[in-house]
Length: 223
Ligand SMILES: *Cc1c(COP(=O)(O)O)cnc(C)c1O
Image 1 (cartoon, rainbow, N blue to C red):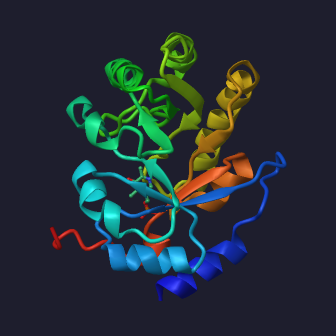
Image 2 (cartoon, protein in one colour; image 1 turned 180 degrees about the vertical axis):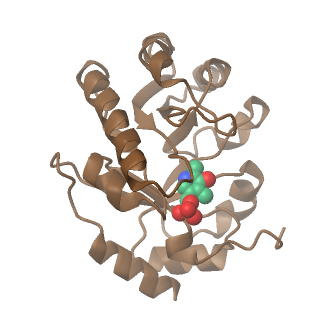
Image 3 (cartoon, rainbow, N blue to C red; image 1 turned 135 degrees about the vertical axis):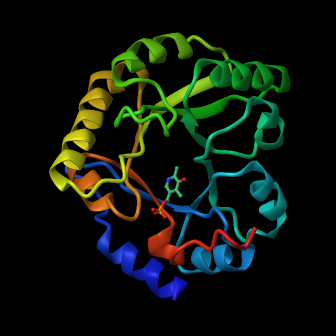
């Protein structure tokens, strides 16, 4: 099933978005065991994204090949040490003290980290990220930190069914991305999950994070 899901997705996802940018599929692997992740990799997944540091650590040596590694979950500063140097892109730089600590620890280890600034586009209490109106200023401040490189923006759209509203929010994210991308050499706009990736790509996303549509519904009782 995983193999078929990956193949189907890879055939459905356009190679490029409307802006001519390559679209990258990141498999969201939370709660999946290494065996299933490796099946996805074998079927063509090149990028995997973890949410939980413990899971990342536990499975690290069991992952086949050398997929690009993304960290997409909320990160506590005291766990940075387990990820440093092993993550290609942190999607969830959602607050100043995380960025500062990632830079500080990276600087002392001689490791520069690539991050995306997370924006709380739906203004939701349940989600992390900078307020939309604060993101530009946050970018300016965080870009001064020595051991970080801001590669773009990330957001999670609200879990609502209103396609029009979701599209509005995704378009708003793209507008912010376009405003900042030349100044900071942005490469990635990471929006889009299993339920909304099509409209996100149409709005200008170039990186989508899919879990359910690759692995099926997550079993939260497993842990
Ligand atoms: C779980 C998760 C996803 C994938 O969600 P699905 O709806 O299963 O595709 C994407 N992004 C983040 C940050 C996640 O935590």
